[in-house]
Length: 474
Ligand SMILES: *[C@@H]1O[C@H](CO)[C@@H](O)[C@H](O)[C@H]1NC(C)=O
Image (cartoon, rainbow, N blue to C red; front, side, top):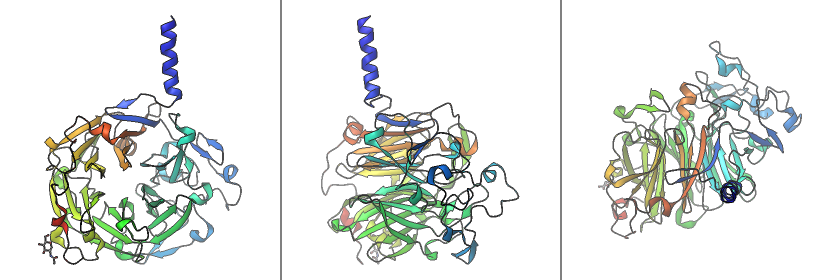
């Protein structure tokens, strides 16, 4: 009897300390949610709310104008002269089905599907792109010093509820080594069959020490070739040149119209690259995830940067999501306005059913980690070896708890992964009695130890010596 009690106590203690012991392979569950809740100005928002007045005061004109300041409610011209209606309550579509009946609601719990999670110090930033109405804030955080031991913590709008309104919709964020958080605001509410292009997409950067917005750079119309380009701005990757925080470049993957948009902080300018390798592979488009079968055509999705070579250039690894191939180009090519089209390389094939959303490289070890949606898995590849399935290894896999890994990021010596069961949300219905959204973490060394990805870094013997990447015009 006493032993039995001791076991229970130890089990409880572990839960209290936030070490649930729940794992998927080598990944440790940090958080899991059946449905998302919020902490807004100290008020727990646990269920659907029609209006926000009692949470943020009565500064807003009405419960309808939930997202935007007065000045943004005007019609504005954007891009190719297309008129954008800034008011989220304008002319509900005739074909309106459910989503359009939800206009004006402050919180529709079911519609809140987390897409990305990024840890910076004591905060985990969680993004919820606005693909439906009823999302209080698209950029949020969890204070890990407060909620580190809670399985399903509430999200807090970043920097706070009022200022979070300056962002319309964000897919994924990335922090840089200079204490800044980079986001791409798509400016769009992606209501199915009725997308609302409310603002010009912009790069928005926050200073994490002051939690102030320090940059809003609107992309140029030449960066955005089609009306639906804003809906595809899935990820952002930041390159700091030679440790100089003022000399930063951001690479934005455009999955919908197949390009990479580059922004130079120093030049306060942006440009766009096109390349065949940014396109999807038509034979890789049939997917079966979370019990749903569908055909997707997402192009370049994720850009991961290796170590700086002797020429000061990092290797930019990238892949279209609908593809099993991995590609690379010198970041310096992307950072010049005219990239050498023949300087892009095919690194290899990850094998059948290896479609991946995000990937990221741990630069001390040169090991790449992939979020694999067709495998419900996280895998690794040591970039010093040729890329093929034999040189990859699955580190965690689960059809329920790692269903649609939507974000993956290496921060210091940890890998952070988000999974959100997205295809079931899109094509069917989530079971709100089950856990649907997960955040995992693992130490890089624990992940790769004993796997084919383990290996010592051998300078100058890499699979891709950086001398191959020197661009003569840079
Ligand atoms: C473009 O890249 C290819 C392959 O790396 C190289 O052979 C060629 O010289 C480059 N051209 C220019 C103009 O830099």
